[in-house]
Length: 291
Image 1 (cartoon, helix red, strand yellow):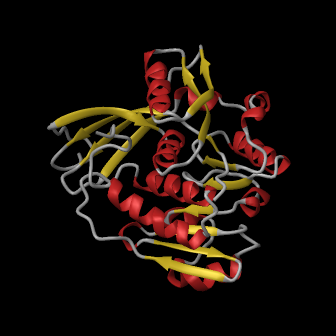
Image 2 (cartoon, rainbow, N blue to C red):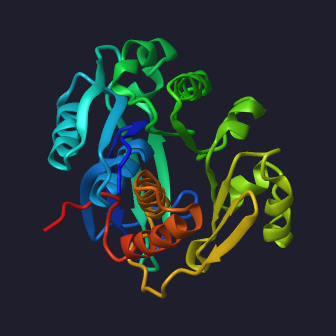
C-alpha cells in the first residue's frame, strides 16, 4: 500500500509536568511528588504520535534560539521526524507548558507560547517545498489564524489532504473548516462550532459538506464519532486506568493521520486512533521516551 507523506505545521513546547495529589484551588499551594520535563506542544505531540504509528512526518514550526529549542529539535529527530522546516526565533524563547496532574489523571495546563507565535504565513511560503504534493497536511489551533489559513491554501495548491485539529478553537473563515478532511474536535470544540452533541450522529450526517468534508469528534473515554459523506461511525475506546490524560487527544490525532496516510478509511482510522489515545493515558507526559 502506498504511503503518503505527512507535513505537520504546528507548535512546539517544552512541557514541565508536576504530579500532585489534588489540583490546587485559587490561592492554594500544593506540593508535587515528582516533576518531569518532556517535549510538548500540539504540533510536536501529533508529529511524534504519527511517526510512532509509522507515518513519514516532516515538521514545520518555530522554536527559540535556546537550549530548549535545541532539545526539542533533537527529540523530534530521534523520533525519525524530518526537522528541516523548524525555524528559530532570536526574539522569542521556545514555548513552554506548565502542567499539574492529580492522582485521577486530570490536569491543569498553562501555556507560554513563545516562538510559536512567530510562525507566520511568509515562513510557510519559504518552506513550501517541504510540503509533498498529494500528501497530507495537518495543523492545529495553537498557531496564528493567518498561518493556519496559509497552510490550508498551500495544501489546496499542492492537492494535499488538509486535516485541521481546531484545538483550541480559533477564528478562521468557514471555508477553511469546509476544506478540512477531517475537521477534528473534542466535545467542547464541537459545541463551539455549533455541533449538537445531544444528537451527534444525526447532526454530523446532515452537516457533512456544509461544515467540513469530514468530521471526527472525540469523546474521551467514550471513544469517537467519525463522519464522512454517507458514513457516520461510532468507535468505542478500550477501558484503561488513566494515569495522566495530558496529550491523549494529540495521540489520537497523530495515529489518525498516520492511518489516513496509508489509505485507511476515516472510520477505520478513528478506530485505530481511539486505541492510541487510550494507551497514551497509561503513562505520564505527552511524549515520554520509548524504552
